[in-house]
Length: 308
Image 1 (cartoon, rainbow, N blue to C red):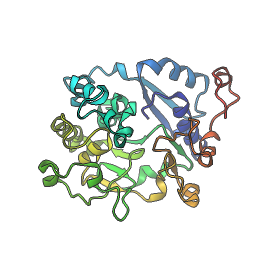
Image 2 (cartoon, rainbow, N blue to C red):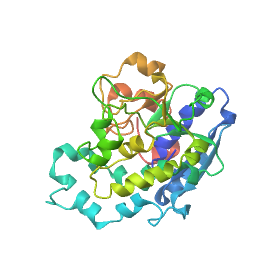
Image 3 (cartoon, rainbow, N blue to C red):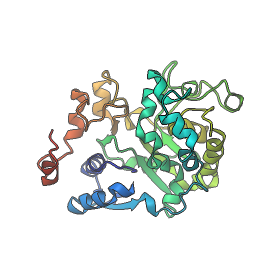
């Protein structure tokens, strides 16, 4: 779990523990940034996750995470990306078109968001990890995920493609020969947010090296724009094992028509999109699935004027 949001991280942890059959066997590994490290530590010291264990790390302590090793960090520091992202009237600026509004989200410039491509470096002693985004709620015991046979694949994920949408051609620039030569435009997309990663296979197949190769090639954003899903689709191409749909139901942050039975039966529900459940603009009918794991009577929340 990589997060700079204390309340969101607390909900992920609380919901996982409360729905676990054996919470004492759960270990949460949480990475946050320097700004939120103290508050994240204090929150979980004051509100420990029952019989589960939690480790909190500071992104700043990863000395290997620097621009000489990480292409995306070098690119995030570049003047060209800053111009692309912020400069008014720049011919390719994100401010120049409403169709690009979603890319103004600051998560695209956060190294916490890209840390998912460095799991073996972050957790060198672990062989398998369950990755959760901080905008999910866990509704069922997740233990069975550990025994799923990934058949040599690295990433276990729920696929998101329908008849004609959420396929590779939505995320990647197939007019570029590097993309068209190496990938199928009709290949099925999958979701980040609830993934099981085999870190032994990751190391054997040099997943981080594959990511670095493509990220370097995309320094001018000609293969994809921004975000972590497009490079994820590329990096784990033919290395992703499809999980059953009920493990991860998406859309609660943008889609008002998510099937109620699908939500009820889901192991994990995901508020992907802009309508996050901790915001006032959240969709009211989906909010209770998240707020049920928040203690609004807690004195810290009361002092901060956080209300349901």
